[in-house]
Image (cartoon, rainbow, N blue to C red):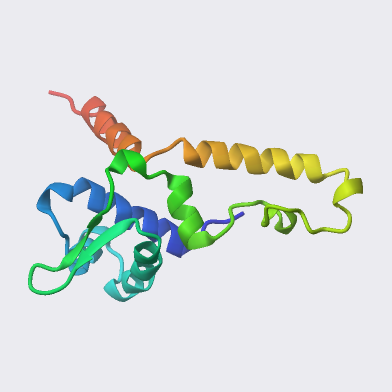
Length: 145
């Protein structure tokens, strides 16, 4: 499994919104500028996030985007599933029911199920808020007088 640019940028966009939530609605051009990401590329990602209900949007002069919930309510796994689809390491685990004709006799299936479980549990244990908190704590630890 390899996370695409779309998934990585979606996570950065969501983190930017989380960090700037006190400003209210945030313009996409401001996010693009702060993150060093093309505004056009972000315009391709926003509809995926918006359709999933993770963003609030408004148009007009003060238009922009904001998180629909608190940063602690979004996991990395949630965001990546929106942009990447399945995070399963093999295609046979993409669907809830394994449609592979060899599933009953596959010796390696338990390996892939285990990896899928580890990936999901790890990504679902990390929230936007925990990323921000960890980043701030590391920045404080690196500050010396």
